[in-house]
Structure formats: C-alpha cells, structure tokens
Length: 271
Image (tube, rainbow, N blue to C red; front, top):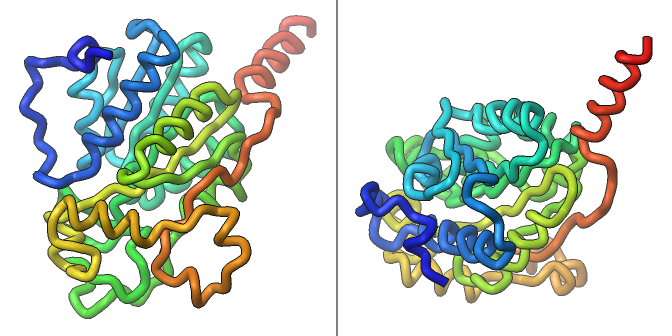
C-alpha cells in the first residue's frame, strides 16, 4: 500500500518525538483502512488533546481535533447525525480516562457504533510528563517523582465492564496483532475499544529507566514483558506483576445505539 495516499504531506514532518510509538499505531490504522477499502470521504477521525490528538492533522480523512476529553462526545454527535460514517476516535490514556472518563463509560454503556483506539503510554507525554490514570503504582512521573501511590485504571477491563461490544489490547511491538485487533474492531457493530500500549521515551522512559530510555529499548521491554490473555489466566497475580496482558477481552454481537435510537424515532412518529 501507499501510505502517502492517506496522509496530508503538507502537515509533515510530524511533532512526535524520536522513539514515540504513536506513529506505529497510525500506520496500523492506515493499513486496516486500506485493507477494508474504505473511502476516505466516508471516514471521520476524531481526537482530543495530547500527543495522540495530533493524529487527525496528518490524515486525509474528515477530521476533528476537539477539546480535552471531549473526543467521544463530538464523535457521538457525528455518528447520530450521519450513521453511515465510519467514526474513529483516537485518544490518549489521560484524554480518554481522566477528563474524558465519563464520556468513555457512557459511550460503552450505550454501545454507540464508533471505534475508539487508546494510545496508552501511561503518562501525560505532551504537557510535562505528569502522572496519568494508567501510570502504574510506584512508577515515576513529574508529579510523582518518588513513585505513584495510586492504583492504575485497567482500560480494557473498564471498557468490558461498561458494556463495549469489542475490547482488545496489543502493544506497538506486536504490530501484526494490533492490525488484526483494529480490523476486527472496525468490523464489529457497536462500541469497540482497542488499547494500544505505546512507548514514550521522552517522558516515561526518562523517569522509569527500567523500561528503557530509547524507543527501541522500550519496544523490547514490551516484547519481553507481554503475556497473552490465555496464558495470563493460568498465572498468579504475583507472576503477572509488571506484565502487559494482551488479547481479545470482549467480542459479541448486540444492537448498537443508532439502531435503538431509530426505533425510538419510529415509535414517536406513530404517536
């Protein structure tokens, strides 16, 4: 495939740091769009604020760069106004589960037919390296220089509990799996979530050197510490400490919100 067919070349070079995993996720999205043969004019890519928030600026789709934490609410309006659009939301771990947390869980509860891809680098990379809702306990950030005392959100479990139709997790090292999960999520009716562990050597690696200080080292850290879901189910919590559990957590077929909303409209017309 020709990636340039899907990119706004006048917006290059991108702003992502050397070793950032976000470009890997972007290329995965573009490969899947190419495989599915989706027309660019039938796609809307929506983002909030943060490192992942710059993604729509680089692609030649219908795009929205929205306010912090509100990407899913803007995407909700798009999908309800034009249910035929393929609506994709890209959001960071802070954007999706901190200020945008309520939008996240209620979109999953409604099972609105949009696709959310969470670029999870476990930190606020763009705004100074602060601790995020997914920064692991004891890990360091600029706001927790002596170690994070909080428990971290498990984004995939949160999506599962809230009612999403499809939930999967991969890393930026395991690109083939990431492609597969994104493709399957795009083909699933209802709210889908793909959590992609991404590397951030500039902020996270600098503060947590055991994960590696360069992009390559952080990718190898993902490789060496990833456990497939089926294997993880047979391991103890102690054995899973510090591991990336990857796989498909939810895959089910159920009515999406636009179908239910259409029924309400039809009922109202008959009154």
